Length: 200
Image (cartoon, rainbow, N blue to C red):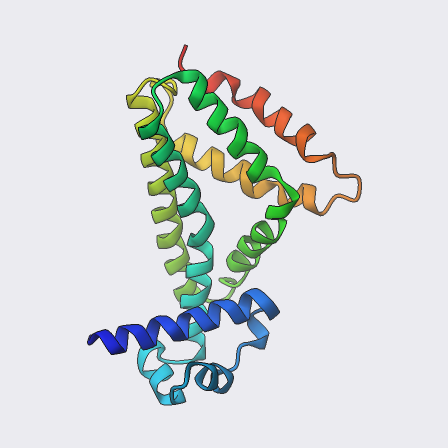
């Protein structure tokens, strides 16, 4: 694929992601995307096959987005710090970011991305692949923290990666609770639950 074609494809995908972020999947119209991207609808069909194909790719991009950033942040920090207390401080900060109400939109996005696979077996298969990639990246960060002696080595790195994702995404239930505790109360519970994960 020529560089110009890759660029056009990326532009189309970025616009589709932006439109879904703003107004949901139902608002996505091929003609609107073509107009904003300055391309013909036929080019969108060439790259994505159909509206369904474009929606699938956009939903997969949205699904991967934040977890990859979080995993990269942990990896970079583990490589930059050399003591357990600094690592604890990093996770203290990250926990407060993850449980914060400012992430509620991202959590709900992930729920809608998973829901979008209902009745779409091909998209479900692709989402399973994307989820594996996300879990791989978090597992890699956990394994690195285990190698340098910050996290207990007797715990399965992939199980930890899945646990971290489960609690982070599970806070969508707190977002829907009219009596939601404040962010610090939620983060303090996570601190208590995860205290046993650190190497001694």
